[in-house]
Image (cartoon, rainbow, N blue to C red):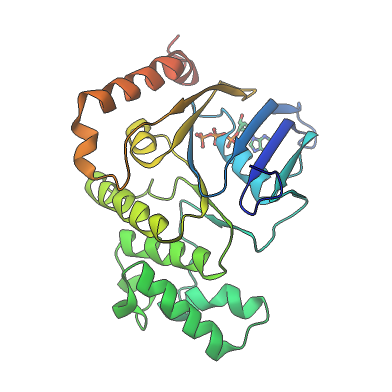
Length: 265
Ligand SMILES: Nc1ncnc2c1ncn2[C@@H]1O[C@H](COP(=O)(O)OP(=O)(O)OP(=O)(O)O)[C@@H](O)[C@H]1O
């Protein structure tokens, strides 16, 4: 494997210190190293405040490391780029545009002709199973459908890397479970590199090739837990003893810190 392979992410010795005006600096991440292989699905878990979202924003180029470097496909990440796309917890769909135009939006912004952008957007909607919803408006969709539109929008620009920050956090438990299976189906079609942030350990174990466990602030990699289940993965794998053992192990790594973040230690 070569650092310049498209979709390969290398985080090398990254520190991130926030320096808010008139407040104490906040050391969010310290000496964080991580390598993600092209096409790999990595989930990141850790107590609240351990720096998960900060790491994702660094990977997208929305934040710059205080020290260390991040490369994507061998190129230094210095700002957002079309080879990486982000999906947030709250959907940021435009309420006055149809589903199709919401998905086409990024392509139009990047200079593509509207007709071509719509064609590509339609393919994206087909990939997430929402072709029939193309002419609806966001308010006419359920929460799960809106997040599928968000994913289609991120995929429409054909990024090498997909960054997802708790994309299903606002959904109810059943919808969330179905959406995670749906995400694996979408991902398996062209296996982009995925970095997925979640609070739900079982969601992480179900989705990931490897689960990155962050320590409490300042966040650093505490352990990387490989997930051995074959793909395609069906939801019943979550009910197996081996699955339960991996979830228990990850929980044991962060339990004290989760209690600490709640003031319970
Ligand atoms: N812009 C900022 N200015 C100052 N401190 C910040 C800023 N953004 C984040 N932080 C702090 O950095 C730390 C890491 O925040 P981050 O949001 O990355 O954690 P997280 O693991 O994603 O948390 P959660 O699970 O609660 O979403 C926290 O202590 C947070 O308060």
